[in-house]
Amino acid sequence: MVNRPLGKSFLMVCTAMLLAPLAQAADAPVLNTGSTAWMITAAALVLFMCLPGLALFYGGLVRAKNMLSLFTQCFGIAGVVGVLWVIYGYSMVVDTTGMVEGQVTFNSFVGGLGQAFLKGINADSLVGDIPEGVYVTFQMTFAIITPALIAGAFAERMKFSAALLFMAVWFTLVYAPVAHMVWGGPGALMHNWGVLDYAGGTAVHINAGVAALAACLILGKRKGYQNTPMPAHNLSLTMAGAAMLWVGWFGFNIGSGGGLSGLSGMVMLNTQLGACAGILGWMFTEWFKVGKPSAQGLACGALAGLVGITPACAYVGVGGALAIGLLCGVFCYLSVTVLKRRIGYDDSLDVFGLHGIGGMIGAVLTGVFCVPSLGGLVDGVSMGAQVMAQIKGVLLTTVYCFAASWVILKIIDRVMGLRADDAVEELGLDLAEHNERAYNH
Image 1: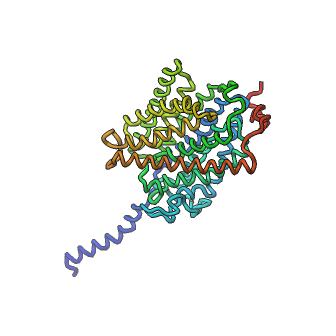
Image 2: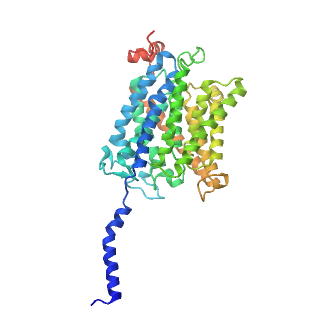
Image 3: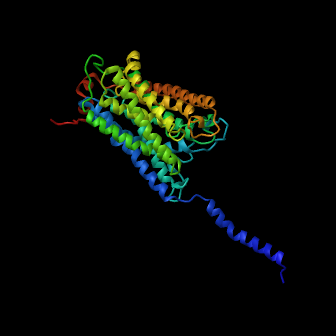
């Protein structure tokens, strides 16, 4: 006969042995259908930002003879970058092989190729609690829209073949490493520095804006720039495209959380407030300086606010979101009207002024407004230390992106030439390069 204490212990051991597999199963990632449904929607929204949102926004701003060239570039970039993302881009961004938290190694700058061709990914693969296939596609849309943003800087004058080659090389040597440095996790360079960038102030907006500045400086001004009027040919399309970008931005920012949580509501609210405050900042500045607010200005103000709030949306309170949006609206307006004229570069659609300057302002102000004393959501941070970390991230992205973009563009110019011929530019890229017209009348 088993005595009671021994019998009780025996039952406890048996119970523990039986429950151990269940405990392990509970610790394993479990598919969350709600988060999965949202991330599929978010991926579609970010793609919608590029096609048709960005294409319409840019297309309406150029002259009618170059309308289709913006669409062809956006579609072409989507095709090239989408394929390269699967071949090696995803792995370069997310592979953590060789990374050690707090240490700087080669893989602090770029991921390895352990997941090239999406090696090891199947229907059961999860990232957090969503299928990895969904995560791969969501991140792919970021990789597509970032180089597409640059196209606005060299609109109406770069050859289609040169643009595609530049985007492919730039994605490989600039976008993927910077995205890894900021989002690669423990051991990635900007992660080690403590840089806060929730949805792409550095990897997307500063990256695209600085590359845009390099491109328009190397290409030179459009034929007739400053002497020939070059008004937007269809502002209705531009306004519609800006509205699509605004709607899609919720997928861009909220989706960067990789699922849904209580924080998603704050990200959504801050995104909306950034856009609204950006409109007011740009509108009142333009009203004061010019005497009339413009439709194009209101659209650009919304985008300036959205750019600025992108890195900060999960880290600041509503006061911070309002301040960032407002300041981005004011200073992005001044950058495209005053700074651009004084330096004298021809950034066709003001990519640097909107995305470069807006991204820098938003990234630095993230360090200011993330502290709890100003309504921020990040506990235990020092404003001074965080602002310095943000500035380091901005400077690294700016210097590396500008230098690398300059070298890539110079090499391509030597190999095949960047700029369309004068006759092609005069005729328009739509007819000369694609044998099509946007409008047949």
